Image 1 (cartoon, rainbow, N blue to C red):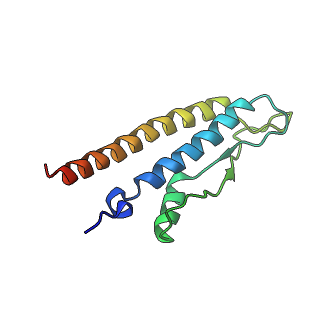
Image 2: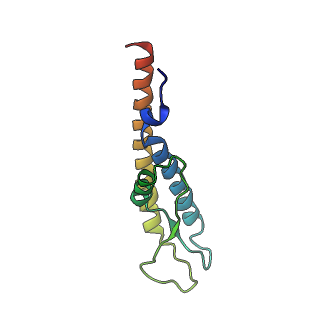
Image 3: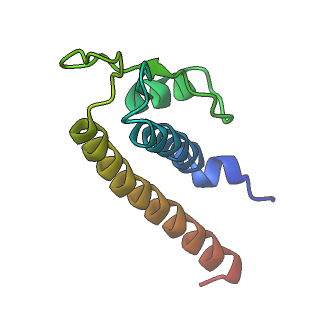
Length: 116
């Protein structure tokens, strides 16, 4: 009987990939804080994970949304640095948690294979 990695690892690989995609978007937002007319983007992580489970998908192609600014700027830039920094820090912690869950899954698989 073979091991089904999709079943054994669950949603953790998709969550990790989604967190990585979100980190890239948030870092682009931070890098463009002074770029006129730059529109901040983000991913609704919970909605995307729900969509992946509902549609039984393993490939993550998230729907990117524009962030609605709290206060408009004169140059049209919608990046609020405090918001982006907070979201980036939260996403980084969540990424580490997803990595820890995935690591524990691999440890369990290794122990099962070794018969421990």
